[in-house]
Image 1: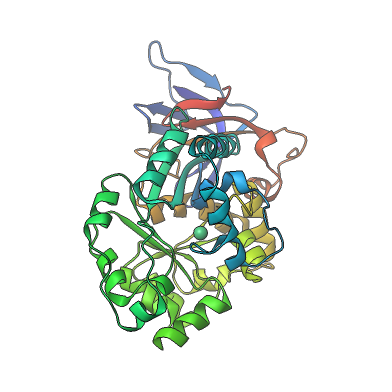
Image 2 (image 1 turned 135 degrees about the vertical axis):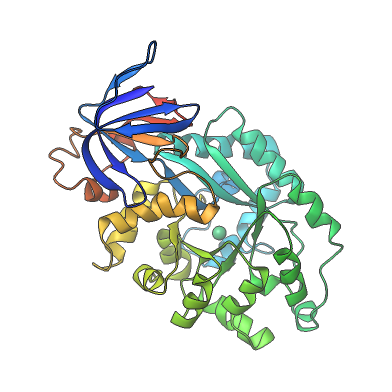
Amino acid sequence: MLLRGIAALLGPDLTYAPSVDIRTEGGMFAKIAPRLAPDAGERAIDGSGLLASPGFVNCHTHIGDSIAKDVAAGTGVDERVHPVYGVKSRVLGGTDPGQLAAFMAASCRSMLAGGTTTFADFREGGIQGVSLLRRACRGIPVRAVILGRTDAYQDEGQIRENQPPEAGGALGDLLEHCDGVGISGANEHSDAALAQYSKTSKLRAIHAAETDHSVQESLRMTGRGEVERALLARPHFLVHMTRATVPELEAASSISGVVACPRSNMVLGGRMPDLRGMVGAGCTVALGTDNVMVNSPDMFREMEFAWKGAGGGLAAPDVLRMATVNGGRVLGMNVGVIREGAAADYILLERHHVDLDIMHDPHAALVHRAGPGSIRAVAVGGRIVHGRA
Ligand SMILES: [Zn+2]
């Protein structure tokens, strides 16, 4: 397929090109040049009036709680989503799995319609939970990165005594079914359990420094910082880091990406993540929308909130990079960027949509004006999967 004469945000810097031709072939961006002649039989699309952006990469979701939208709104993080005693686990435990899957599928469709072409989900419930999410995603062409967990949490005594995790077989079995582990946090695991995760070969991610309480709990139980302990799992990325200190961010930057969830952090943790500080410390920062219970899985909303909440500390292209290019990097996937050889996941926006016309600044327009309503089409692997081109 050939997109002709289209405006596009190209490469890792999202460089604006006012008019370019983009060929997709075999699911990838095959050729990008000022003028390309269509091959025999190739479908050509007139790109005038359109802006091509990389598809969004939503690096942190819990779509398992899509049925619990706004349940216990106004209460704290532990009351809502603590893995052992939060209201979320009660609601989910008391609901028919088929119904849970139907609401998860709705969130997947919502993400595609909002330009999210890849998402990474922390999935509770062991192999069963992973299978349920796979079932929900069936037939929906969004790329789902499923990070499972064994739901084996250790108590304070076990952590203080540094007891080994339960038989390691459960983790190995789980990882045969998913793309990696999404660890609830260092405060539910001994050093030995965290070290066990570090030896697994798939993607590893962990919540860290989300709230004052979680940071203090780590110090109280172990005498060590939560981030220091989370890094024992050698995560590919740390989620939240809202309370991380500069030295902790610097320590994280050398081995991990950081996924920030600004809207969720304001609701559940009462503080904006210091996105500018994270970038300054050398972190690769990506964005996530976190629990559907708390937030819509809408990257447009997340970007606007991140940009304005940073109080002038970030430029619009920085924020857009967090929602696209950096997401691909953090997940180790060839997505989130329009360049030759990358997966052809993209969004076509109507430049003359009432909310966007006149588009003086394409990056700013995308970050804080565009929305699902200004999308003409979304493509995953070169195939239009939402809207029409
Ligand atoms: Zn989370």
